[in-house]
Amino acid sequence: MTFAGEVDGALYQSIHVTLTGMRGMLGPLIGWAVKTWFGWYAAFALSALLLLVAALLMLSQGRQLERDINTQAEPVKPAIPA
Image: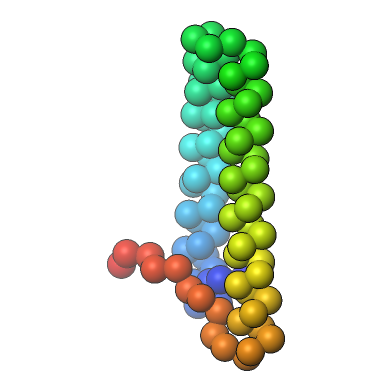
């Protein structure tokens, strides 16, 4: 894995799977609540906003990784509390 390196792959994968499960449980409930309280337009607008934020974060992260590879620097490792 690019971020985890050789040793921490299992830890990063377990965090990823846990957060994906939480998203799968909470996402539909939050979407239903937004649609019920604010309407369809707000639900789609919130969805589009979250998609845009995620895309911008991935673009930024990809550019940073490309800079790290081009300069042969060590990739930035996110801090995970021990």
